[in-house]
Amino acid sequence: MGKVLVASIGELDVREILGRELFSRLSVERVSGAGQARRKLGGDTYSMLIINTPLEDEMGAELAIQAAERTTAGILVLVRQGVYAMAADKLEPYGVIVMPKPFNGEDARRASRLLLATSARLQGMKRATVKLKSQIDELKTVYRAKCVLMQYLGMTEEEAHKYIEKQAMDSRRSRFEVALDVIRTYEN
Image 1: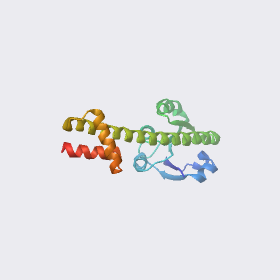
Image 2: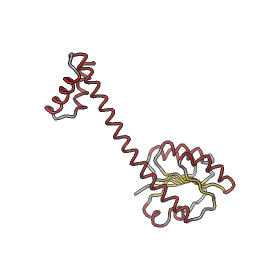
Image 3: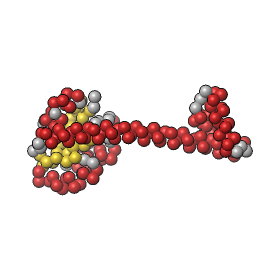
Image 4: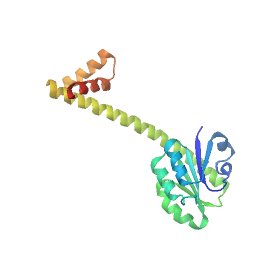
């Protein structure tokens, strides 16, 4: 089940924005200020952030920008009709959807679905990025261990590679674990 964070001073009918079906599948938390929202966003993963401007401690645009840069949440900002164009120009480049108040319920539900789908996609991309970064770090460590073996034991790169592979196979450990042992042994 996904989580939605609502930042709003007054009551906001989240059921109208999400629709009954989505509302029943999502957990909704509410805060009244941007500072509270930042603390919640920093410690948890939300699928969606709804900001009903203005908030008690700021307008909400900076919160939307920071959330767009630091989280995978889909972000919907509700603004007065008079500032809609200016807010949209400022926030849409960050992937934030801006809607004027009062809003059309059907448009809000479409936007919510779009934001939730986008959030799911971003979360998948984030997982893939973390996995790739881990693989790159492991490759760097193995390469560094090869360099250590070449420097301290006079091996060629091919010999160092075969040594690490054989040690990993013989000890039933990963090449990364063997590489860490090599580095600890010769560089301490």
